Length: 270
Image 1 (cartoon, one colour):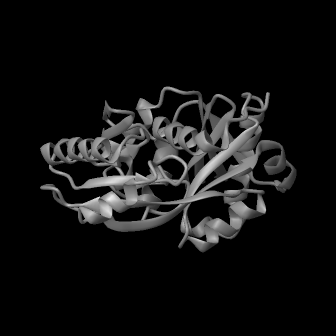
Image 2 (cartoon, rainbow, N blue to C red):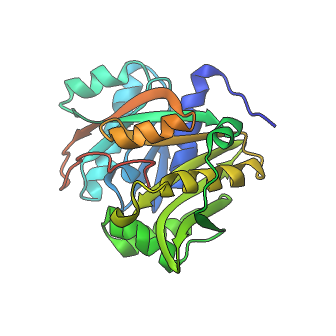
Image 3 (cartoon, one colour):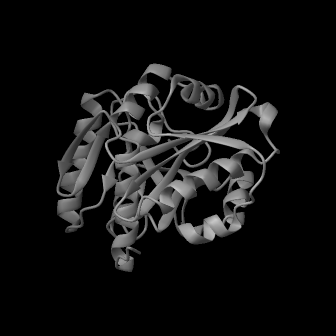
């Protein structure tokens, strides 16, 4: 069954699905905003989702709450800014408070049927599993780096139905990706290919396997997040019928924490 949503709520629904697919260690809710903490994970996993509207005074109170939450945990305040999901007044309010604009990311969607229709059927063998294995995770970690223990715990927190795809060359896994299905949508995450296997159709094989899985798990549409500067990944996803629903970005301010935000870390984040 194809799930449709009003245009004004589609962005909110997808970004909240993504947040459940890349779950933070802890989440507090304040007036519809998600305050998240994810030590050791990619920086954006702990970004605030500002998905509750209000007056300018009410928004200022929520920003105060987010800053206090982040300062108590020793991290900068990072706010995910998605047009169509965030309050209209928020960007100007954060800019006035000294928040800097960071990263540029594309929220993209496609119909599962179109992805399948565009998937080349090659000879690469893909293993699909319901849980991540250490072999699958090791490939991801070799490509993205970071705190392995924290990232593994993140994978184990996922509650929605998920599929973990790995391309096999001989007895070695050389490319991975995962999908999480929720209410008619399948999100694509954790796409990674070892350098020696790039340019051989491994990423396409992963996407095709995840689309196959989505089609039999009542997910008629797919979505992903990819950094705009990752031109190669944007091009690959376009070949499968993905197109941009919305660009989004982040606002960040050091409110007593440490560290910062660089790029969004590549493609199909998480």
